Amino acid sequence: MDKIQLREFIKSINPDLEIKEGKQYIEVSIPPSKLYILAKELREKEETQFDFLFCLSGVDYGQDLGVVYHLRSTKFDHVVVLKTRTTDREHPQLDSVADIWKTADFHEREVFDLLGIKFTNHPDLRRLFLDSSWGFPLRKDYVDDINIVTK
Amino acid sequence: MEEKVINITTDEQQEYVINMGPQHPSTHGVLRLVVSLKGEIVKSVQPHIGYIHRGIEKMCESITYPQIIHLTDRMDYLSAHINNEAVCLTVEKALEVEIPDRIKVIRTIMSELTRIQSHQLWWASFGMDLGGLTCFFYGLRDREKILDIFEETCGSRMIVSYNCPGGLMYDIHPNFQKRVKEFIKYFRKILPEYDQLLSGNVIFHERSKGIGKLTLEDAVSYGITGPSGRASGFSCDVRKHEPYSAYDKIKFKEILFTEGDTYHRYIARIDEIWESMNIIEQLIDNIPEGPYAVKMKPVIKLPEGEYYQRVETARGELGVFIISDGNKSPYRVKFRSPNFVNLSVLNHIAKGFKIADLVAIGGSLDLVIPDIDR
Image 1 (spheres, rainbow over the protein chains, first blue to last red):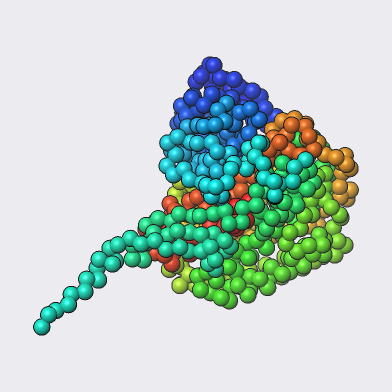
Image 2: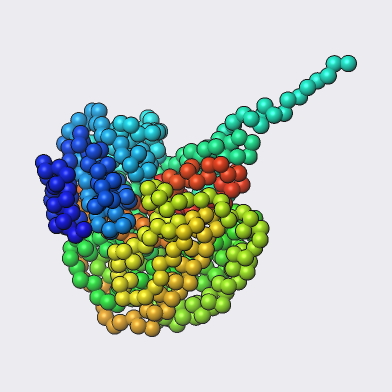
């Protein structure tokens, strides 16, 4: 599918979604509550078959915390970017996609470790690089007086 | 007389846990594997990482784009040049800079040399992991020759930092083409020796065939890229799927197998060395004339937006995801490093094999720890 067809198709799954033509890929913004259902549909639908989650990044947008999913289909070679964000900085929670793409297991642990976003239904959510006494270093309000040089 | 019964079987039936690493020769760095064993059989492997976590992604948020390039060397230090290229390509794509052919060709040749030297070191240490110490000397002997070429042109042997946004730091050394051609001629003769030493060895076959099988479906689901993924039949070569630099102008084969065991991960890498030599031979005599760098603004600021660039390192797909807010430093940088993802499959494929096989499987995934920890 090319970009226009893909856009139409995702629109047909859920007409309320905000779909943007990014610089490279199609970007779909989606509220956290609907993320898991859309991800599962994109993975399983005959026409899309996004079976390769090649990047999962957590982002601190200042007010919100978010996660960006880069998906590719190995069969059709098309790419889509899913973006979700939550306003809750105290107890951010998103649905885990680790049962759809197994690679999400490690990626989500990394996001949990560095940004403190909890993933519900994750099989083994523990900190990955740091121990539990650390804060969440990739958050913009993280302060480390000793090691980080600030602008 | 009282008979003392010693029950041996209970000990064997009990599961016990041992630590492999962080300082273990076959983990190739500071990686700790917590292995649950039942007798000699591996029940589960839990990798514990972060011993050399430096927070490169956080550091990137407070430095400029040309400075980031020097940090990427320190991730996968065996694919240093390709990592540099990834950041440069992202910056150039964002600024829509047109790169002259000369730069593209030199970058491609250097990338392929990097790939060969990385696979040589992998071959050397993989042989050693399985008990063939000779491999280590042979592999490192030949790798020196490429490092010498790097030293002459880049001034540095491993951590080259030869790329900069808009081109290369300096032009190639006058001897570069001659020495690369000499090396290819030499190594075409030497590489069959590698096969005689290890690929055809019966002991090696016993240790690697059918060990650590990874199916195509799992390879895609776990996102295993690079030679490890291609050995399972996952067509994931970024050089083919999203060609960058000069890869769209040359002919080369994507090495694909379907078996997905340790042996085929090994063969995939050996075949890749042959392909890399083919690529270099196609380009080395046809380096176009032109400038070695495009003039860029002294302070590089990316326009607001998100940029993603994928490249094929020696170990798989490296993704650079930059979110820019228009300043001279990025708002957020994410490195999708191939080793981090490849490590996640270790538990899945090592389960049910013997602990000695765990060393073989780990070696065949070719993990570089600084790239996992970042």
